[in-house]
Image 1: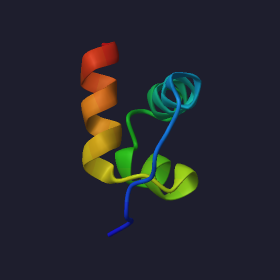
Image 2: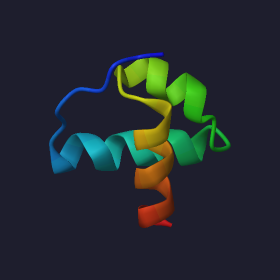
Image 3: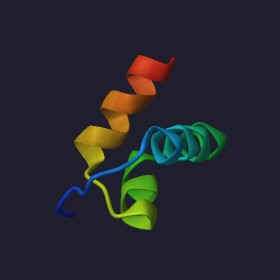
Image 4: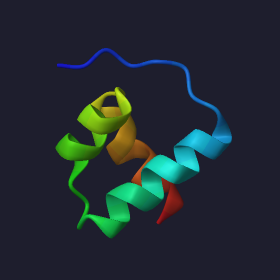
Length: 48
């Protein structure tokens, strides 16, 4: 599992948009941006 890192609001928005554009592929998004799966999922749920 990838260890999370600190992100800015702008990075989080970019990550969420990428995830949504790729059919909510949380694993791919987490690996690409080096954040945890759970964090990506949480941000997407909040954004949605």
